[in-house]
Amino acid sequence: MSLLHEKQVRVLKLFERLSVAASGEKIPADQIDARLSTVGELPNSAFFSCFLPAHLEEAKRLIEIFYSAKDFDDFVLLAEQARTFVNSTLFAFAAEVAILHRADSRGIIVPPIQEIFADRFVPADTLIRAFSVATTKPAGDESDVIIDVQETGNILDPEYKLAYYREDIGVNAHHWHWHVVYPSVYDSKFFGKKKDRTGELFYYMHQQMCASFLPPYQKPSLSKNTKGLPTFNREDELELTHCMNFGSPGSVKARYHHLDHESFSYIINANNNGSEEKKGTVRIFLAPKYDELGNVISLDEQRRLYIEMDKFDTDLRPGKNIIVRSSTDSTVTISSTYTFKELLHGEDLEEDRSEFCSCGWPQHLLVPKGSNKGMVFDLFVMITDAEKDKVPTSGKKLCNDALSYCGVMDEKYPDKRAMGYPFDRTITAQSHEEFITPNMKISNITVRFQD
Ligand SMILES: [Cu+2]
Image 1: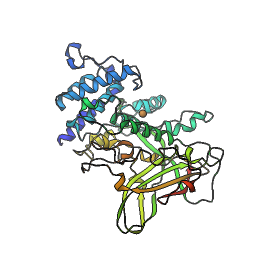
Image 2 (image 1 turned 135 degrees about the horizontal axis):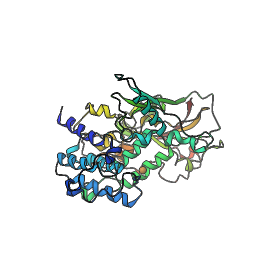
Image 3 (image 1 turned 180 degrees about the vertical axis):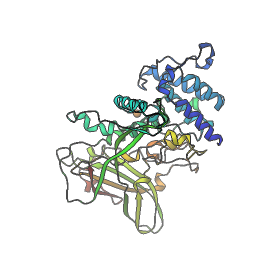
Image 4 (image 1 turned 60 degrees about the horizontal axis):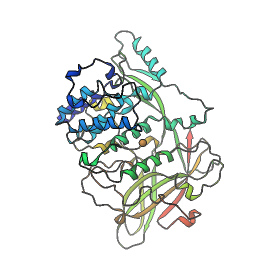
C-alpha cells in the first residue's frame, strides 16, 4: 500500500459510521486533547446549519484546529477524538475542509457525503426495510441486500414536480462539496492563500443551480422537430453500510432513480475570416424558449434562465472550421466520482489531486428534464477571442475539471469575463435578431422526457 493509499484509508475511517460515532463510547474528559477544548458545543442531535452564526463559529474553530495540526498523524489523532463528541455534520464539514486544504493531505479524496450520511438521503422506511431484510438472512448468506427506495411525495402537491431535482442525490452532494471547497468561514489570512472571485462564484453557482429547475408545465411542443434530446430516469444504487451497521457481511444498498440523458455532441461550424490561426473561447448555454403559457420568453427575462453547458478553448484555422465537442467533456460537470469502496481500494489516487478535482455539477443533470411532449430550448453558442479572455496562469496543469462552477486551484478564475457572460447584464435588444452578432448562433433543441 502506498503512503497516499494508507492516508486515504485512515481518512475514510474518520467518516465510517459517523452518524453514530458521537453516541458511542466516550473518551474520558481528561484524555481529550486540550486543543479541542473549544469545540463540542453543538449537540449531536441538533441540525448543523451554515446559516446559523453559532454553528459556523464552532465549525471555524474546528477547521482551524484541524488545519493547525502539526502533521498528518497529529491531524488524524485530533479528528479521531473530535468525532466522538462533536456534532457529526459539523465534524464532517470541518474535517473535509481541513483535508481538502492541508498540504499533507494533497491527493486524498473525501468520501461521498451521500454514503457518509446515507440516512439523510434515503427515507427512513427504506432503511428499516433494509434492516429487516439484512438481519433475517439465513446464516452464511453473504449476498448483497438491495432495497428499492419508495417514492415519497404526492402528485397533487405542486412541489412534488420538482422533487426529482431538489432531492437529487448528486445535486445535494455537489452543493455540499462546493461549500467545502469554498467554505464561508475561509479566512485567507489564516490559510495564507486567497481564493479568486469567490463572491461572484458563490452567486453564479447558486444562480445556475436555480436556473436548472425547469418550468414543469410546458404547453407548446414541436412534435415534428426531430432535433430532440431524450432524457429519462436511470437506476442507481447507494451503499448504506458505511453509514450504518446492518449486521450483515455483504453490501446493503438502496436502489433509486435519477434523471439522466444520452451523451451527445455539439457540432459547431465556425468561420475565421482572418488570415491567421486564432484561439477562440466557445461558450454554450441553454434556456427554455417559451413560458408556461406558450409565449416566447423575452430575451432579458430569458437571460436569467440560461444555464451554462460548456466553455472551452479551440483553435480556429483561417476559413471554415467544424468544432465537435462531446457533452461528457463539459467544464461544468465532474468527470469522475468515487464510492467509499473504490476509495478504500485506492482507486485513481494521484499526488496532485486537490479540492478542485472533486468539485463539479453531476453529469447526469447537465441536460434539464424537458417534458413528455417535448420542451423547446434555445441553444446559444458564442465564440469570443481567447486572447482577450485569457487570465495569467502558472502553466501548471492541475485539476480543471469543472472550472466554470469550481474555479482552479491556486489560480485566478480562468476567464476574464464576468461569470455567465454574455447573460450577466441587462439585455436591451428586443429580439434575437437584434441581439445576435456574427460570433453568436441560436438553435432550437427539443428535450423530451421519456417515462
Ligand atoms: Cu449553497
